Amino acid sequence: MGKTHSEIENTLKRKKKGNLIFPTDFRGMGSEAAIKMALNRLNKENIIKRIAHGIYLIPKIDPLFGAISPSPEEVAEALAKKEKVNIKPTGAYALHKLGLTTQVPTKLVYLTDGSPREIKMGKTIIKFKATTSKKLAMAGPYSSLIIQALEELGTDNIDEQTESKIKALLRKESPALLLNDLKLAPAKINDYIIKLL
Image (cartoon, rainbow, N blue to C red):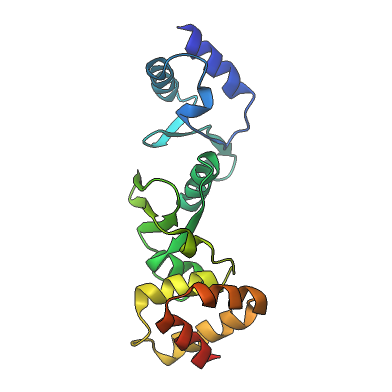
């Protein structure tokens, strides 16, 4: 067992169970190859669990439910925090997050100012799609998601039920944030929301 392996193992003992870890967490403890090898070995020894390429978990066992794994959302957020980039749900995933669809998407698409990439987590795919800073400047917890969702849906074929749900969500938004986001929205979506309200 090499020096890198034992240094990583000691570091892991001080981390909380359920924490996500990345190879870059151990920079300075050895070469990239040595860190990769150590993590592979620790994965085989069940000290950590590989949940996707380059993403590991310190297993947490619940007495009732057994091993607890993080959700794809938690993985995406941890990754964004680690890489110091911004992410925002878009498309079908934005619709689901708003409760506008009950279908759970198997692909979680996020807009990011980081580099585009895809992560496969079991049957779920997390996709980071590079975007403009304008799209990420939307700040409202509801309005920013609604605008992303409407870009996916289009404004022409929305049924009355979905429309009233959108209206109710927009009413929860702070007027200042809504105004900010509408300025950044495509013209067609801005007009649609104004008419709706």
